[in-house]
Length: 272
Image (cartoon, rainbow, N blue to C red; front, side):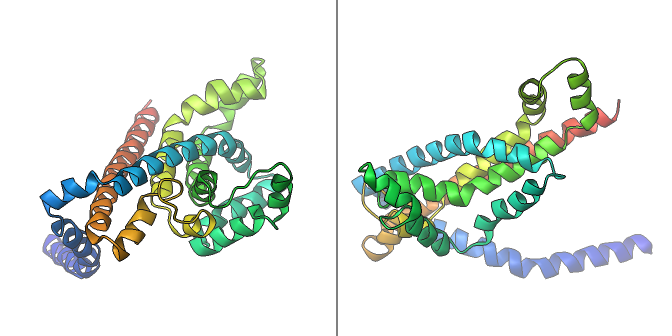
């Protein structure tokens, strides 16, 4: 009787979950079925689409590299939860993930624009950031970097203090502990953070269009090309949308496999 009751309850919860699952599933499938193979091949060979793909791949790669360089020290700081600065930084790092992207783009424009605090200094050297490819990278990094920092912080925090203390007692410096213990033991979290950051940067739109504009071949990434294609060439917009959907699915599958691998390794460690 108990097993029958449990099956009925599980069946009820499955039925109640269908509306929301369909709400996500149907628009994606509808978009995919709108693709005509001949038009898809023609659109993917167009100059605008090729430039948008190339620019997106280039800028997101730079974004990930810059995020690893500048975000890793922040992740190291955040895993020291007892520090006052870490508590403040913890909230600050999460702020871009809850800010509307348009607000983020406007804030970047006000900071790096001609009248901004940093923009004024850069202008003295003849350097202009807004509406350039560099602005695309900064917008992507502002929005996407928290995903890397959060994932890497969790990886660093999962390492037992006794391991680091043992290394310190053996004469290892803080840099050696970080390089030879923390990074190797957190590599799965670091890779996962890079994957999530790249995926989020690839789909960034709001901050980019306000801070970098929508200049073909210069600042027009795939999401911006979709926006333009919606007004000019719907088939190009659909083609790029389907490409982004495919990339997003691949990224999610890879990220979940990386996390599952991490969980399996942790379970194996607990057995001994």
